[in-house]
Image (cartoon, rainbow, N blue to C red; front, side, top):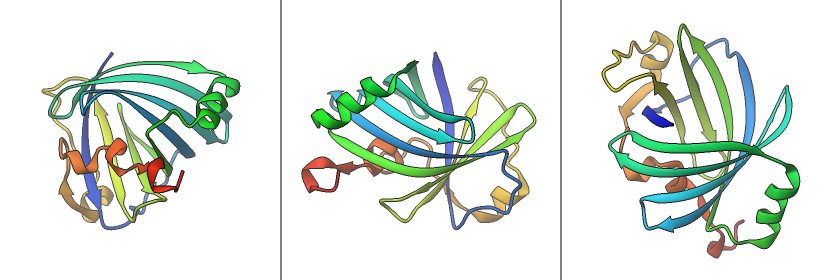
Length: 161
């Protein structure tokens, strides 16, 4: 599936009525420097705990090809315990639905950053940014490599995994 997204750096968490809250732990394994990677994700929410495996290939500015499916706890724990992953990240995600668009506001644990992310149905989609998000926006960071989740993740070589 093609993933078309835009990202925005925020000053603080916007004052919105969020539809749901998730706590996320992501493990990254690199396959091809800065182009392809695997991600193992644990998502804790009001709906329980779910685990996912994702393979992503970067195509261009803000566009990735993504293949994702649900996995079980055993598979996630196996990767976590094996330490075969390169980086790890934990974050709190607040989800806000705005019509047909879903905004994800991520508050990262390992770095002091708040990022709003939105997936678009097509490249030419005219995004209308909600006022509450626009009021907290510092800059659009779509395509800026230093704001890719895998680059914000902590290397296990730093001893912080």
